[in-house]
Length: 514
Image (tube, rainbow, N blue to C red; front, side, top):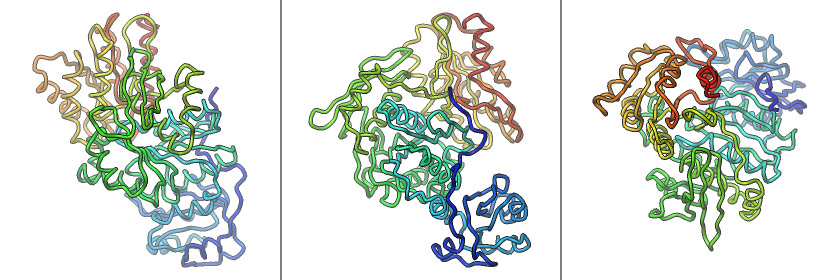
C-alpha cells in the first residue's frame, strides 16, 4: 500500500551548514551577523519555512517574497537570501540578509550546496518533451524496480520514494523542493531517480544545481505558447537540457524535425530512437501487436541487439515511451540483456501510470479511458490508438484550460470532432476565464471540422461524463481527456474537489457496468 506523506519531502536528518561558509562560497554580500549561525534547509515560500531554514525572497507577480521575511523569521528562518530590492524590504525583519543580484538564478546552486546534492550517488534521469514525460518517468521507475534498484521519481502527478508519495503541485518542483527531495532520497539509499523536466523548469531555474546522467526527449508539439512566443522559443528552452552543464548523455526520439534538430544542435553524446522505419536512427521501435489491454513491441539496435516485450498501456506512443525509457537505462550503464531477462520473467513492463490512457472500465460495457492529454497532438494519438480496438462508436469528453495557451483550442476541437464519433464538451479548469466562451471556441472548431457531427455541450464535468455514458453501449469506447490523475476542478481561483477517475468509476457502478 502506498504511504502518502503530508507535505513536500525533506531530509529527516539534515546536516547543518555554516551560513558564513555559504556567504564565502557564493561571494554574497552580508547584512547583519552570520557568525556561528547554521542552516539546515531552504524555503522559497514563507508558508513552508521550517526552523533552521534559509528563506529565499524573490520577486513575484503581485509582491516581492522578501516582504514576508518577518513571517519567515517567526516560523524559524535563520536568514534571508534576496536581491538588493528585497534587502530593503527585509531590513526590518531582524534576520541576517545575504544579497545576490538574482536570488532565483542563485537558488539551485545554493540549495545544492545546503543539501549536499553533489554527494548523492544516485543516477539521475531527466525526461523532457511536450507529451509523454510523465509516462517515461513512471516507466523508468517501473523498470528500475524490476531490476531490483531502489529508485525514486518526481513527475506531474507525484513525488515518490518507493511507496512513499507526495502529490505534485508543479510538473518540476522548485529547486528548493527538488534538492530537499534528493537529500531525502539519499537517506533512503535511492540509487536512481527519474525526473520530469518541463521547459518552464529550465527557463525558471528549477533544475539548476543538477547535472543529469542521461536526458531523454520524447517529442515537441503545439503547447505552452502562453509562456513562449513561438514553437522555436519553446524548443530552445528544451534544447538547454542537452548541453554539458545540464546532462552527460542524451537519448533523442527523432520521429520529428524537433528531435533531429536537438541531435544537430546539442553538445553532448546522444543515441537516437525512431518509431518510423524510414527515419535514420540508432534504434528502431516497431509494434508487434495491440489490444485494449496492452501493446507488444520490438526494440532493435546496433549489432543485432534486440528486445521484445509488452507494456500494459494502449497505443504505439506508449510503446515508444517504453523504448525510450529502456534506452535511457542502457545509456546509463544497465545491460540490455539484464533488462530483457527481468521483463521476460515478469511478462513485460510492470507499470501503473495514473491518469495516462488509464482504463477504468471492467470486462463488460463500454471501454472507458481517463487521460491527462490536453494538447492537439495528445488528442490525435490517443483517439487513433483507441479507435483500433473499438468496433462501435468512440465518444470523447473534454474541455480546455482557462488562463493557459488559448491558441491550441481550435485544433483541439477539430481533432476531437474528426477522431471521435460523438463529442461531449465540458468545463476543464476554466480558472478566471468565462467557461462558456471556452466551450464556444471548442464547439465552433468542432462543427467547422465536421459539419453535422454529434456534439453535446455539458458544462458540469460529472454530468458530462454521465451524458457520454448514457450514449454508450457494449462495443463502444469513451475517452475522457484532460483531468487524468488530478483531484480538483479549478474555477475562479477555487480548487473544487473532483477526481475524474473516482467519479467515472462511480458512474460506471451506477450504470451497472462495474
